[in-house]
Amino acid sequence: MKAPKSKKSKKREGVTRGVANIEEAAAWFARQNIEEIECMAPDLAGVARGKIMPVRKFLGAPQMNLPLAVFYQTITGDFPEFEGVVTSVQSDTDIFLAPDFATLAVVPWAHDPTAQVIHDAFHPDGRPVEESPRQVLRRVLALYRERGWSPVVAPEMEFYLVEKNTDPDYPLRPPIGRSGRPETGRQGYSISAVNEFDALFEDMYEYSEAQGLEIDTLIHESGVAQMEINLRHGDPLELADQVFMFKRTIREAALEHEIYATFMAKPMAAEPGSAMHIHQSIVSPEDGSNLFSDPKTGEATPLFYAFIAGQQKYLPAIMAILAPYVNSYRRIARGSGAPVNTQWGYDNRTCGLRVPPSDPENRRLENRIPSSDANPYLAIAATLAAGYLGMVHNLSPTAPVDTDASARGIELPRSLTESLRLFAEAKPLVEILGETFCQAYDRVKQAEYEVFMQTISPWEREFLLLNV
Image (cartoon, rainbow, N blue to C red; front, side, top):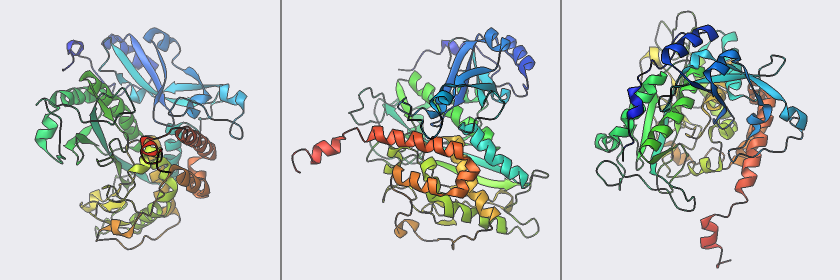
């Protein structure tokens, strides 16, 4: 049953578009009659951490404090051992979060007038917190700026709509649409299958518009009740913010319709996994020209091929970021529909790296490896870091593949532990992303894996209980 829409009668301005400081924000709050504000920072998992406070308190002291440990929290809510990374005293020390007013927007699903703003994290002495995913991406973008390069990205996010599931021992099932029936077969690109959830997507579009999220297209993917949203291309940090906010948006819209939206990489065993494809190009900050194309001939430049080569070389090492959970590796399997290799090709979706058809002005590379459960800040940062290394070291790619690249076998790590080992050994990547962040990320992921290993799966009870 569709949720009541009474709260939508409170039509508000939405995104701020141009608010640059606390004074301008105060005027915007007044115009919108905003009562509360959600002050948040994305953690290593991409979960929103922070505080909710009255607007009057925020205006009195917009800088808030949180313990550094929020950037060491696992997806299960636990904290790993800090020994060798930070001292126990430092982990409890406060850090300070300053709002990025460019992200200020309403919370359109809130019943009372509420705003939200993403924060950057700093130490008391003013140093950026290296463990913060936003800072990791800023660090990579700074390297690009030093070279006179301006990266542009466009994420594509796949997700499933599923029935509410309050018992994790039971498999997920597709939800019932407006016809009163769940999908029973795969309906890739079906308009009518999307129309089954028209009311939900109307809410999603309205909520997205209110927050300034620029949705390009919505399609039905190949899985049962699997959808894909494409965002317009733009600045990497801005697009990472949009993915972060969109995930919250579609979950909230789905809950209003008594279903779940999930970004698990492989939520249902018999269905395809969900990806977060990242389209990437590099333009000149002076005139916006695409540096992957020769301005005279329109042909691909050596920089383009070096960018591809860097991603080819470092894809296995950044898998710990592109596929961050044990569930992510269920998508990296034969016959899964997901690319499982480091090959590249022209309009070849069986390759991990695809060059989509385009004119020279829009030449780009699509990384098809990241799963939808990846932290968008970290996935974009790691992908751009790999391409950066390729360009700086003038690497050469392999020959493009024009056949089924999956026939070459699986060229990527098959487990989180293997990925973490390759990640730690990739010293050039560690240097770019920051040693402090890399140590923190490894420690959190190792802790999550240990918790997973304490869980006995139904497969083990089914096949080992009486047979071994």
